[in-house]
Image (cartoon, rainbow, N blue to C red):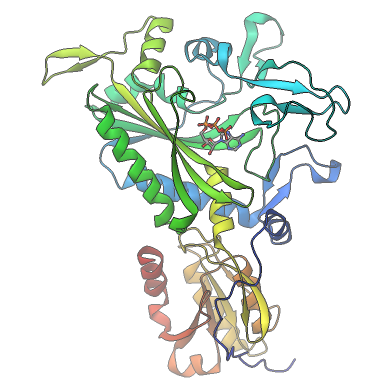
Length: 452
Ligand code: ATP
């Protein structure tokens, strides 16, 4: 095997957008590069369910970690929680889901397709122009049974949101962690909704993950905290790289507000199919704690020592989707440009979100000392981050493979490295290279991950 030369990339990327990002390009990249696969694909798939592949699970875990980092670790007024998916069925009566977590469903009398009436802009079938049935209310909760007997006494639901697990644990968390208002509880977990019209890749699915906060405050301070959380959550998406011009806030009109909500705003992202909700932030007043007090018989009021009074806290709820956020970060990072006269696809992901933080690539795979040095470097890095070692192709091709999955740093080890104990770090977005000492690599990556 002949020695491989550094494939210098003489031309800097032009930054020119070669093509617009479309959902087809994202779906195809996700399949090709192990980010997201159709679920049960060898059986023909199961409508609108998706599996995160080896790089997808890294990306989504990083999104969840970035959220947890900012709403739990970086604050002193928040606690974490991981409640069960199956809950007492009375929870969903108290929350109002049994009665009113419904969407209006219409069927086409001709082609038999089903639609959400509130998503239609015409009174005829959008597919075949056939006549539609009257709208019926369809409950979105998945029902199942606990135990071997399938009777009405054994009915339980797969939770349609994680929030109720927080409300029913309000007192447990407050007491065990000796919390005073204001404080919040954060939770990440699966939720299930039998959506009538799922679609747009992972944007709307029947099984998904939520990242929810319930922030408990003194009544009267709710509006201030509502404004605070809207700003805080809006800034989070930009902190992790989403371009400001692709984000907007859409306050709900009076007719759209749930009867108990005092205010609600959606953070929207400009997806390829148009502006769509990423996260909702609501001022839910004391509705949830009041209902759970009533239905459970347990007093959930809070004793305010300073004011010497008891009251039910008000709640601000920032409710985000882990899958939608992951999809938005992916779409926003997708870039096509020209490097050295060739088209390239890369993901300009924030380094903290990138599935692989660094790839170690020996330039000369037939030189055992070079390979050994590269492997040793990788052995140190992998103890801290998801990194890879690869010597299976020419360097130019290896760079492009890493660009396509958003790896921010490619580290090459060459013959010179044996003498000067230095390596080359090549940056994904600019393709520019730095020569740095071997024993600085770890600190270098750390700085870039934190400072980026
Ligand atoms: P939509 O109007 O899109 O149905 P929603 O207003 O019902 O959403 P919420 O109940 O506020 O959504 O849920 C909070 C968050 O959970 C949403 O902003 C979204 O990120 C996520 N989410 C809700 N439903 C789904 C779904 N079917 N698939 C993926 N994520 C979802």
